[in-house]
Image (cartoon, rainbow, N blue to C red):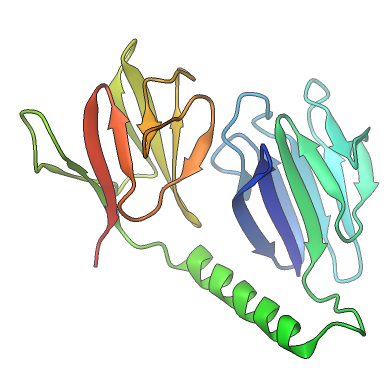
Length: 211
């Protein structure tokens, strides 16, 4: 198996584990590894994972692909290689490689962590937003669709994407009118956690998972 961990400004925003096969990376939601940022091409790269090798190929000449900070159109990935797409960094690792000196307890914890991530990847519970102020206070807005849009142009337009690994909010206008837990969203994509407070168009809403 192969593990891809996506970083933005030094912070982990998503992590995925894949079996051998073809993995697509890009901005479009249909990608196996979707990165919602305009600096990433809709179809940026493709990774071919085999039992004993992993090859990545650039798909769009206008959007460069960097492997360990060097431009590359095609490369064989090695354990802990870094892949740069737009403003994001992806760290590749092989989940089956265990050093002979690895402590058995730490290896066990790593396996447990991977199992948890796999469960989260498969089972995404339903979630909602509940309005916390204004004339619609108490109203519950279900997040059933793959993409749910909120707000108005000029006052902040936010989109919450329901993906296989959670719910992610981003701004269509890249402004600071939208906040998550009082932190401006800007052009970031943020993974929402239970009880996070989102403010869009000066309306506070609390994100929560259904029991």
